[in-house]
Image (cartoon, rainbow, N blue to C red; front, side):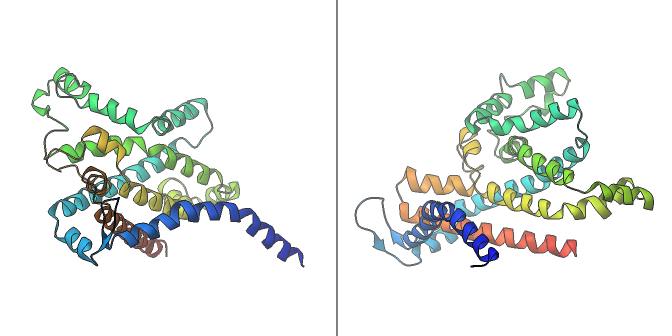
Length: 291
């Protein structure tokens, strides 16, 4: 056997345990969930085959479309909030000074906290009576701006976007800093010789060199946004009147609150399909932009 063959064999053997675990805990449940999406099943007892009835009900359910709309708002807020903010911070914090290390740690810290803790903290911030946000507005003479931030159906979803963006900037910041550090120093020297600096250097050299990292960040951002559940569930539970319902909470409520496991499986399959469509679309657009 050649050295290349031995290397490939070693790689396959090394990846095999992780691949088996991933298949068992991820791929198999996805296939199983898609299968039960064609059944009326309460979680126990016999499952009754009903074909596409679950998917037909999803399409005709107003709450599902409201959940999808809210989730698209979360996706938009994440992609156009988390990624650009993290990229700007990474460019500002690129130099290896102690203050930059402190800011990196402070930005990444929310990811270390439990989502339950983050939800409780922001719940107190938004509290209409004892919340710091309304208190600050009062102190600044902006009492007319005070709101029931999580109870007003018109603004509750937008209020949730702030903690969602704040909570997940850290991982993308670390990714972008690592990508920027991997840019060869010779590129900076060549840019200085050619007189490229500022915005021209950013858009002509820096961004193209880390474009693949940005694409990965967008994929993670979209997939993570479509799974948004814990923070929203802790802060609002999907209310008031489903105004903050997202696809994951919609699936949870139908699966575990009223024990419609077949319907919940169909919803989870729909979420996977929507996620794949959005990710494929974003990668196509970013590929076109790069070219």
